Structures are given as structure tokens and as C-alpha cells.
Image 1: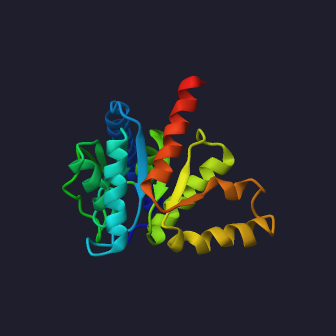
Image 2: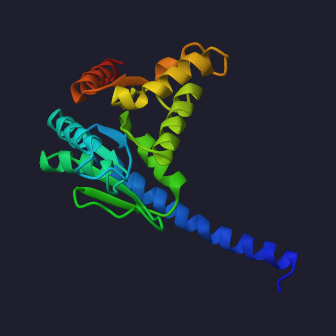
Length: 222
């Protein structure tokens, strides 16, 4: 039986070496994504919605239209909506990035990636989603998608990232969340009066693409 001091020493030893794996993941991500010359849009969505689900078709259309408009897509690289977005961009001849994560279930890399990375650590992967994106689109999903959405909202709210458009697509799916943000969070002053406007709803790819184009034009003039 290992005593308390032995347990602590072992943790310190393993954590110190873990830093090198973490650093390596940051280096790999920065080197790959910084070399992509097209503007990138990060897209989140459920791994559980297969090709027969309406949201899969929406994801595929979004990926295709973003690629045709000159944007690259960045997804979690797995199945479901992630696959749909990658597939749409890939088959349209665009840049299709997958940031894959090691999980005991649900996650396996899809086959529609022009650039692919494998991560062990969620927090490193999340940095990559944000660091090189000119915009975000959140498609229907579950806890993981909500985690990614709220984390981006916090970064925008606190000014820890440069401002960029954040959309949730499929108004019918996200309308309840939007109402809760406005009618509960804002009403009870849990967020600032301007914070609900950080999240915009859309139904069609052209709605988000128009805003992303305007964002790029404003940046080029700045």
C-alpha cells in the first residue's frame, strides 16, 4: 500500500511528464492550423445524428456552402453532424479540418478530412477551435455541443478572444435556449444587457455566410 506521501510524489512525477504531451499537442495544432490560408469557421454538433437525421443534411449543406464561399470548416472530426459538415466541405473541394479526440465511445475519425489532428486533452482541442476561427456555428447537439457553445459565449462575454460571430442553426432547436437567455438570465441580471446578443439564430447557410463575409471585410479595413 502506498502512503500518502508516495501517492503525491507519483502524481507530481506523472503530471510533470504529462506537460510534454500537452505541449506537443499545442505545437502540432498551432503548426497545422496556422498554415491554412483560407478563413476557418468552427462548427459544432452532435455525434449521434446519422445520415437519416434532418440535422445531418443541414450540416452537409452548411459545409458545402462554406467551402463554395471560400471558407474552411473545422469540426470535432467524428461522426454525426461533424461528419456531415466535413463531408459537405470535402466534396465541394474545400478545406475540411477534423480535430479528433480520444474517447471510449462515440468518437472515431470520419473520412472527409483534408487536415486531421488527434488530441488526448479536451482543453488543448478547445483552444484550437477558437484560436484560428473567424466565426462559429453551433448545430443541434447534446451536452458536448452545449459545453462548446457556452465556453465560446464566456470567452466572447469576457473579451478573452477577438470578437467574432456566433450562430446557432435551426431556430426550432435553439429557440428555447435563446428564450431562457433573454427571459431568465438577462431578466434576472445574471448576464449583462448586451450579452444575449452574442448568440444569433439562423436557419440557412447563406444567413451565416453573409455575416462572416462582412466580418472579414471589416477586419481587412481595420
